[in-house]
Image (cartoon, rainbow, N blue to C red):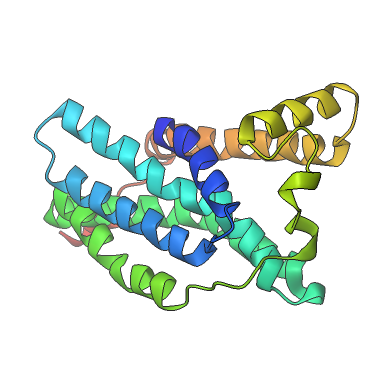
Length: 213
């Protein structure tokens, strides 16, 4: 979460530059993610593992900041909601698959191998991100002249303008959607933390790999 929160504004600022290229930035984020995951596999102790996990958040930040605007730009107008729905549906599906993958591989060949295999599996996606990098301008709604932006074009000034508008009761849709997504993420996080323990203690659920081995 530390890497994610610190890096998301950085990727968002880079994407707003005149030479922005979302897919290339996502590719850089995936490279950082893969290196961090491989670092987790090679960690020497708690602190090295902690730092590598923080770096994993840096890679995730590229998706959090850029994937949704990119989909909004390239998706057909009548299919945007479907594309976004499929993208966000991957979050809970990924959580569920992660428990199955992590538990199975860790029991079979060790937790370090689980991280290493995951990092190697990302290589085709990294190659695709760089090969499909686009340089076209984004949509008209976000193609704003910096000289016309209220309060200047630097992130600090724009953040102050956004904060003032929010306190005046504007951006209600954005605030409600953010609140809903916050609650949704909190529920998913609670299930991710307590779910496996509850399943094991209440229903006797065990890892498939332990049954096979």
